[in-house]
Image 1 (tube, rainbow, N blue to C red):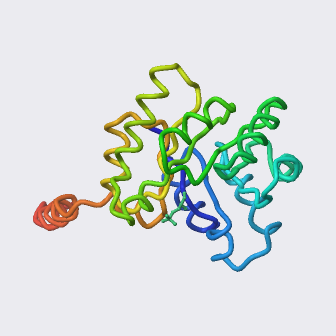
Image 2: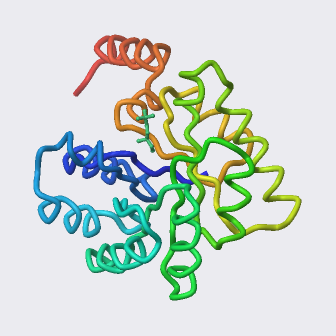
Length: 215
Ligand code: G3P
């Protein structure tokens, strides 16, 4: 499973890159706003930092505007993926951009039929939001399993990008189900490497090492 970081924070992205586990980045307008920086100070830096795909979100609402904005976003780097909302205009724009070889990540997906439409329109990625479904007492991960089954049934190439991940269990279940990508907040990614038995084991080894005679 590929790991993307869900962030617009340059320091966090740089750190995740240094761990050697990062395959790409997703951003959204809320994450960018949180950084309080100009777009031109954030997008090109992220595109340079990361070898893999970087999803940058268009904020237009009509298909022709989405296509134009998507093409503008591609100027930030060769690895840009245009992120579009799961609307009928988003579908039309996805089809147009895909025709020109521009990859699209369809976002804000909350149902398997939305995911089916995105794949038929030629989206490179579908982003189902599991945490936000959990928030309304639905089971977010059930959506992932439904989408994987539908895409398998018809051999769609669209990658399932599990989004709105809130905890390591979401990522673990996504991996068990065979999702293509998980986009993970930095704070959650940090938790993956942690285990109390690892910490206790290190302490023990260091204590015992002190007892070994050194030249
Ligand atoms: O990848 C989408 C993600 O940023 C949304 O996460 O936690 O705001 O639902 P959240």
